Length: 333
Ligand SMILES: [Zn+2]
Image (tube, rainbow, N blue to C red):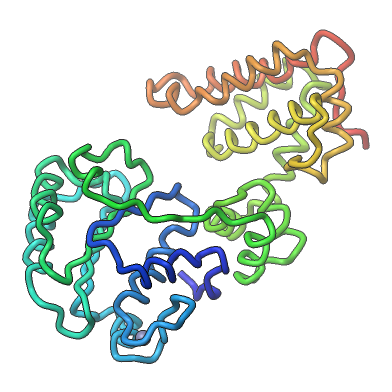
């Protein structure tokens, strides 16, 4: 990961946490694609730093900060699991031993478990014992995307950390800091809101062009009719990231609903406003909702391993059907 900019002012809670005395057992909750990881990096770096600033930032130059930068701090242990893998009891036993020792460099020892829901039941139970009676100067931070999957006995031991959402302008600034041109940073921020990391990763993989291709195709489809929808479903079933397509579809459908209700403040796809407005006016409300529900349910349909081609056919025919009752609109060229 490339270098990050300084944290936004809204991350001031880190400063309050340091001043009030850090809890020994903490839970940080954040959806994937948010900056929760960087937030926790900043917190742990400041917590281990010899002289954090009044703003709650690490100094960057003390021995602790230097050891962290080298990835070689003896008082920090991070347990992670790759996507789909579990955290085994052996890792947690090792972590429990680590926490029992006194700190070598900093004022405290720091264990980070990420994502916490990846712990097996045995691993979670092993950690529970330490959470019940942590050694002096031992701090445990659990990161979770789905805290409901954690044992209730574990959750009740943890103090949830505040993680303020970024405002639109802050997302734009953060994305520009990663080298993204201002107009594209704004476009990405409108769609991905508080998930700038996700926006940045997509941008690197060519999202801006793909988005335009997808939207042009989708907005033209109602005018071309059901046969074109079937052909497109056949094409997209081969190599399309369906969950990414779903994100786009949900944002388009939400824009149509906003336009029907004259909620213009939060329109995502402002660059397609004219086409979307025309389509919103001629859409059949019932079909619009049915289509929305179909896309919302897509992940569970995929889990049930249904035929991807058939699923896409149904979804795209439903999309075309929103306008099949009246005069179909598309992009006006
Ligand atoms: Zn420092």
